[in-house]
Length: 146
Length: 146
DNA sequence: TCTGACAGTTGCATTATGCAACACAAAACG
DNA sequence: CGTTTTGTGTTGCATAATGCAACTGTCAGA
Image (tube, rainbow over the protein chains, first blue to last red):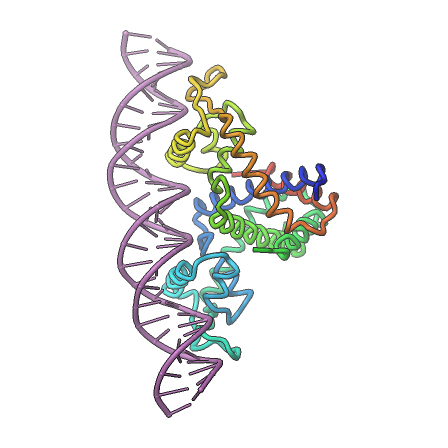
């Protein structure tokens, strides 16, 4: 913990993560992909967690409920997300969210668009290297403490 | 390129990067660190590129000049950044930016604060694993194409 | 010296966000 | 069964970050 070398490695990771985030958000702002950064995030989350509620998204994203509410409102108006009558589980309140066919379609196209951009930056990487990065990032995201 | 396995790895990397970015920005928004996310980014860039100009930052960050101008204005008012008279290089116009002592100090403290947060999430990682992630992220950021 | 290109600034608009207050529904409790 | 409590979602208001366009100033080269 007080290891100097460890600190330096962590600092580098932090710095690189900051760069990644900065550029990712900036690029997503310019590129007129089918879905904006926030929209893509929300739709991806709903796709991965069918039946989730707005509150679940807010908790996972670290956003205020009001922000998610408004974002979802936009997605519903666009016909990408459909709020179910009631969340299925017991003791669960709120509306269960689900993607519409159009939502799934637009997400797929957005993923395609973003994949090609990332693929350019990953040109020259072996599949094993890509997988290793994916695994490390996944591990980092799993160890989420807040 | 049309390799299905490769696509999947890239998609995973993209998804994890999106999660990283989302959470990094959200956390930075809440945590009352010495410097906000944007401020930290700018100050870090100036620290790493002494004598850079506002335009350089805008280009690297993918931001509009006006945005950088305003952000820098705030940093100058806070006494963290000092605009030099003229950029040193030949054929270079504009003002060369440099950190003040106070800027360097606040950056160091901000780095400390963020390091401890990241260190928690990296608990259990070996130094080699941390370094490998740092190297992979650096390689990814270096291969920046836009 | 004059002109064009570039750096920086500012006005105006938009988007994402937070907080607080509210409305509503479901659960818990008597 | 009625009341209270708790959790979910929405809305009004404010703020921060950003982009675009227009403007100013300045430096370089003809």
